[in-house]
Image (tube, rainbow, N blue to C red):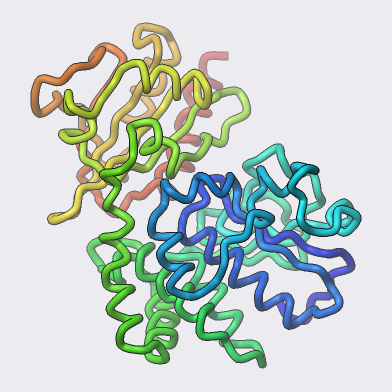
Length: 361
C-alpha cells in the first residue's frame, strides 16, 4: 500500500452510517497518508454533519479523550458548502477519493474519482482495477488501518493508538467470540495497540460500549438515523437501521410513534425499512420489517426473501406485548444466529431479492 504513488490530493471517506469504526478509520488512515505523502493534501471525511455527532456519543467521547478535534471541514455536508468551506477549493476539485469501511459508493455527494478501497465488508466486486484495493473480512476496518501503521516506518501517535484501539474494541464487543466478528487480525492489532495505552485509557475503552449504548437522550427519529444505511439495490429504495434497543423497548407505547416511522421511511426508504435490533446481556439480535403497504407485491417478496435466508435463522413472531402501532405495516422476527450482523445480512438478502424479482420478470 505504501509503495503506491498518488497523483492527486486525497479525500479519505468513511461510509454512510458514519459510525465509530468508519470515522476512526478515515482519520487514522488520513493521518498515516499525510506522513507518507507529505507533498499531497489529504483530508478525512465523515458523511453527515457536525450536529449528527450527538447521535453517536461514543465518537465524541473517544475523539475528545484522544484530544483530536472533529473539525467542521471534515464533514461532507459542510465540506461542500461554499459558505463554510475551510480548505482550499482548488485542491478539492482535483482530489480523488479513497473509500474506507465500505467498498461500494454510497453517496451522490462525491463525484470525485475513486483511487482506493480499504474495507472489511463482503466484497461487492466493484472497482477491481484499483491499485489500492484491500478488502478483508474482519471485525473492524480499524484493524486493517492499524496494520498499515504497524507495517510502516512511522511511529503511531498516541491519540491515533487510542482511536484505533477504541474502534476495534467497540466493533468486536471487546473481542467477544459470541459476537462472531473477531478475527486473528482484530485480536493481534488490539493487543499491539492496547499494551501501549495508559491504564486510565484502557479503563475508558472498557466503558466505551456503555457510552455507545446509552441513547436515552435520543428521540425515535434520531435512533433510526444514527446508524442507517441505504439498501444497495438500484431498483429499490430501502434501508436498514441498526438500533441498540430490543423490539420490546423500541415498540413500547412510551417510545414508538407511527408518524415518526412513516415520515422517516418516506424521506429515506419509501419501499421498505428494516430495523436490526441488538439486545445486551445476554446478547441477542431481532429484526423488524416495515412496509407502507403490507398487502402489495413488494411486501410479499421481502417477506419471502427473509424467510428463505437460512444463515440468520429468522422466524416470524408476535410482539411481546400490546403496543401502540399499526401492526399491519410491521413484521417481527427473532434471529437465531447472532453472528449475522448487517454487513453479513445485506448481501445475502440482496441476492435473494434479485433472484425473486428476476423470476417475476
